[in-house]
Image: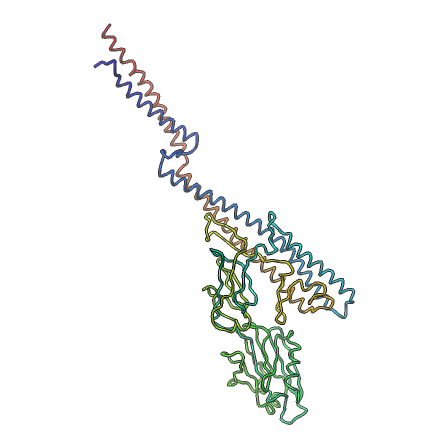
Length: 508
């Protein structure tokens, strides 16, 4: 049947042509953009997955930039610390040289002191000038702020802390008390008595953590004089003495399992037994301030050393098992890295103390793709100025590197150079410890995380590419097909538009 008013074949051809042209347009868009998904209509579910992966890739890229920035900060801090280390080594040499009293004139010591003062000024200058984009790195800017909340905490060090909110309470629980090494020598009275032999003598070696020294005492020597003689060499032996009842108490000058007191009788033991009727006793394990009188050694049998070893503190910090050394309790981890130094009473009292309240500070780095506490690393970079380095407890008072300056306690001209050496030793330990922590952070945290994120970025990009990117071989084949179909539809439309002419032929 021939029709003129409605050309159905033409309408069909137009619809098919439009479909083919639309398909060809979509294929050409994919080939032109390189993306399989250009809008939600292309693949709604694929678009959601692709956008999420793209967001993740952007976060990973930003995290890698943060890691590179952290690496740069550590490199700058390490450069300053390396210079400080070199200056401290030079300072140590000057202290040792200045102790040569007989070989140095006062003028030479003053010249050494001038060098020491210059070194101290240079260390302070480095601490104040080492910065990253104007932010000081070594002057305590990135140290933690904390308040001591218990008097038994003598000193503390905070290397890392993670916490949400305004502050973090640090609680320490002592489960085993710290002890000094100790011996009690019963002399039978306030002076040596060798059973009526005025010509007898008594000799023994006192040994401790620092070394040993032999002493020789004659009949009639008082226990107080013996204590004075032993105390004169306590820096050499690491052992101090005090009178107690009818004898002497010998104690290590420090707490812990690396401290001890040893006593070895080298002469006069039998005579001492005859007069004193006492012996050498270790401290009671349950009471470090009392002798275990049930377990003594006669002087004649003390030709082999009688030794008592100290005990380290044990406990927990914020519920984590802590390492104990002497009177120091410490935990080390990313969440909390802190060391507490307790006084004798605190270290010997079983129980829990509210040690510190950390109120802020620390160098905060976000090293992961997400902004949360798991991605956060918060480490302390302590102050390396002379007023902070080398903290040393000397006779119950703390001294620091600045005390090597002119006119101070440990100056090279008239000060205590033994204390000066201890202060410098501790300062070297402070700086080397800080360098070690920064190096560990750089190699084990920054570099390892960067490597891990690099792999994650590659895998994320590959996953997004598989979902969103154009398969050129497939789309090129589809374009060829759609071009042929479009041309066929165009030709068919032309033929359909000519069909009404056949109806006109009937009227001819």
